[in-house]
Length: 252
Image (cartoon, rainbow, N blue to C red; front, side):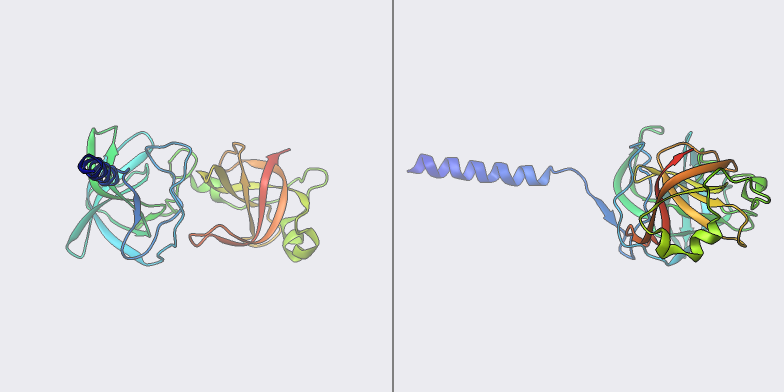
C-alpha cells in the first residue's frame, strides 16, 4: 500500500512539472488586442486573430534594428519603453511614429540578432509623422512609390469583366456568384492568413476599390484581371469586416 502511494505522488509531481514546461503562449496586450500579422519567425503564417484595440499610440523611436524583412523598433511613449516589430521600413531614430493594436509575444527570439526580447508587439498598422504615403506592409516590405497608388484611368476591361461601380451597385445580384473584374492593384498586404489581400480600382468610381483575396502573386501597381466569388458581410474577426469582398480569386 505504501508503495502505491509513492507511485501516485511521483506521477502527480511529474504532471505538475509538465504543466510548468508547457510551450510559451501568445498573449494579447492588457489594453486590447492584436491585428492579423505574419509572425516574423514563422514565414507564411499569421498570428492568431484577437479583438483589435483601436487606440492609437504616439511614440518616439529610440533604437532601430533591421532584418531583411522586418524592423524592430524600441519606442518611447509617456515615459515608458517597449519593442515593436513591423515590416521593414526606413525609420530614423528620433522620429515620431504612430501605431494601433499589437500582438504581444513574450520571450520572443530573434534569430537574426541572436537575442530574446522579453516583450515585443507585432504591429500591422504603422505610420510615420510627416510621411507622404501610408507605411502599411507591402509585397516586399518597401514603401510603394506614389505612382503605384494613383487610381487608373481608361481601363481596358477583359471580356466578361464588370465595372466595380456596377458590382457595388448590385451587390445582392452578384452575391455568392463568380465575377470577373479588371483593375489596378493600388494596395497589397501579402500572406495574411495564408492569402494575399489586394485593393483593386478601375476608375469607375471615385476612390472606389474592391478588396480581393488570392493566393496568386500580383505586383503592386500592376493592371490585372481577377475572377473570384463575391461574398457579402464577411467578418474575419480582429476588426476585419467587409460589406463585400472578392474571395479565392485567380488571375485570368
